[in-house]
Image (tube, rainbow, N blue to C red):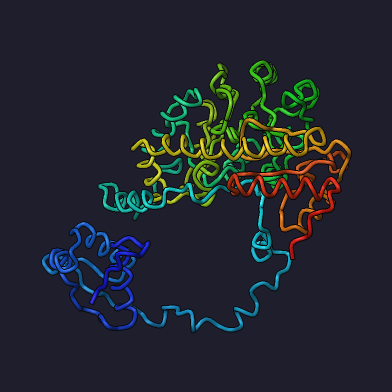
Length: 483
């Protein structure tokens, strides 16, 4: 007997799937048993036939049943010895979990905090869960479903690459064809591919100082010689770049990480001129480009590059979800032959189903609507943070990187030190973040700065937290630590 819970958050097709699967696992349904026909079960449960078909299709994909022409869906033989039940998991395994004190997987202390100014993650209330479930079912029922059983093109699903091409042309001015786009499992994967392309001819790379440490570690692991170039108020110091021997440079011009500096158009042109004159290549990580709050976005470097000197990186992590692990890079046409030669025989790293879902998401116009929605949400949070800091802390701090992105850097005029600021906030269950790790030359880092993201807090929480921080950081003694 299948029971449909109308109050459950689980979709109906998943409730049906779960209950049938449980009956198979427990032996209520055994090998050779025939499932009720989709038409009869749909009528019995008062649901659509498509809903039941989705449930049966999922059971078939996972190997619990098989569809036999003329016979319907038949239960397959399940090797019970291979099934894992929670109660049977070894106690020894539980004892060992967490022993590695160095592992951040088991030392996430974020739950200890009431207010967490985390950067790099997103507000999970903005993720389109219901729509994602529907698009997943649509992808599985599409005529392309057979692709799930094969290795697909190493550069990614052609339909998704076309959608990305069309989106970037309209919103970032990027000029490319779908054949130039490579779907990657995150920007670090894209950077690793780039390192392999240039490992023999350009083992040196210039990076922003300070800059994104997640990129730097990829270059270091590929044995590239690092040339840190200081970041000024208008972006990377191009004169120092010109004086370096690097022919490859990695930058985040739309919202420099971590300072938040936005590179003006004049400097972008100057940088492109450097690349053209020196046979250089620019890796443009268009980080946070979706989030400009009080002005129009500056064109991407790639959009004004007339000599194909830019490799463009983009991601779905910031606006949709970092858990998707999907990004993309656009290679200049002259690099495609090198890419194809080097990675001939490689397989795609992002599952076909994931790519198909995002392709449907974009083709249906959902991506653009989602961006407008989250941009408005984050703008409200951004403006609340900036206004509250300005009202309460005033000339005691300098705010870096406002008007764009999902984080700011906060500099303290009187020299309050990073470690003290973090520990003091911690006593009140407020988490703010260090900035020191983003300097390659550690002794050069600005010790009177911290990093604050704002995407995961609501406006009320931002005001409450900044009010407390203002009191404890600037010697107003009427606030008791949280216990």
